[in-house]
Length: 271
Image (cartoon, rainbow, N blue to C red; front, side, top):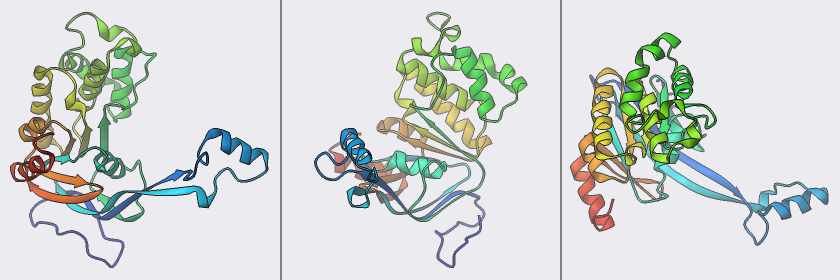
């Protein structure tokens, strides 16, 4: 993870293996339309019909979603990301995964980051069984590895506890069932960097406990786990370090209990 610029990189602690370095990262969204009707489909069509460009520089609004965020994550860490809605947590993870470009700064990763979110794409018209195979292959597992771990994935998800749902199309699943299956597929493989966005908010307490135990195993055998959650108990049970983002800025980075105490003061005890 060599620095390609003659600028400071966040401190790397000796004898610990860094997996992600964020160096003064800015992420900016550009939203078309600032005035009444400027961003509407009808207005865009009218501009096209008049022979004008559909996208006009004057009509683009910038939203600074992440502002000069720096941190270093290390192998074996489970790091919670907290913050009120719109604070930039999910945006930051998407950038670490390479799904969003950074406006300024750099993100360095040691290994392949994998992002698991509650909206992660599985194919609704295919059965859960088929999605297990495709999801495993997409993560780089061989067909044989998927077959070996298939029953473990299904049992972990718990979706067959009240029927043979794994043979039904994904579109027949509840949102909770689909999210549990996504997590179970992702957790079947060790990851260099695994980023989980709200997946533990689904399911009953039994599934959450299984998920938390699996995250601890992933930390031992793989690299780093990031967990975005509004459930402070899940953060406490799973993570020893927390990054608190607020309005796109890194407000605090430290021990889980220390950061959560300050965050709960800020939110009035709400997650």
